[in-house]
Structure formats: structure tokens, C-alpha cells
Length: 180
Image (cartoon, rainbow, N blue to C red):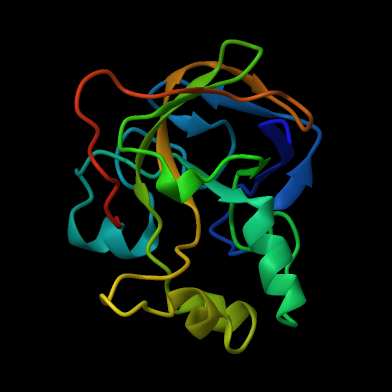
């Protein structure tokens, strides 16, 4: 299966679900142009109240289409963009990639992974029981299925459905991503 983009989404307001787009513009150091989470400093509502000057490590949110399909098979009514992601991917285990992995798109746009999205109570507001479905813990107490990954934009460009994704692992020792 090729590693590719299967959907792109954005919302100018802090809505949980983001609207499908024919393309999105990634702006280095800012995020998705026109998206409520774009900016050099935090835009996430909860984090904004705590430390508004903190660097925005959540400029772009990615979810694997494989997770969406798994949840659909469990009876949840989820679609691409419905859990707030900007980019829906296929063919790459996003949450298994190391911290600082770069994903590069044909336009030259590039993002660097900063962490794993912590599932929040908004999932239940969207659909009852969804938070529990993605927060199950394994025997060691680790989350079973995190809800995608977060990234910063390191090179500007356009991203569209069907774009290929080049995965560039960081040099040197790899560090596992943490929940942020």
C-alpha cells in the first residue's frame, strides 16, 4: 500500500470536526493556513488558558485512515476529518514513528512530528463512547490507540488528497513520541 494523503481538512473556528478541502496550504512555523490551530504559539483552547506564550507544537494534526476504518468496524460513525485532523493518511503507522520524523509532500511542504495527540473528552461530545474506544490501555498501562499525531510545519507548500508522503526518519538515536 502506498504511503499517501487520503484527505485534507481545516476549520477557521475551534470546531471538533474539520471540513474536507481540495487542498490545504502549510505555512512554515504557523501551520495550516486559515485553520483555528495555526500560529507560532499555542492555539489549543485548554493549553491557551495555561501558557499562551508556549510554542505551538500542534500546528498540524494527522490521523491514519486505518484507525478510522477500525473505529467504523466497531460501530462508530466517524469519517475523515470528523476527529479534527488536518491530514488523513494511508499506509503509514503514524504513532509508531519516532519523534522528529519528517513527512515530506510533493510540493516541498514538510512537517516534523512533535508528539502523539492525547485523546480528550471532546471525543465523547462528538460521539458517545468514542473516548473509551481510543483510550483503552494495554497490560503495561500504555494507551492502545492514540488519536493520531501532531506536527509543526518546517517547509511551506500545498498538500492535497492522493499526494505521496516521503517519510524521513531523524538522524541518530530515535526517541519515541510522547503524548502532548
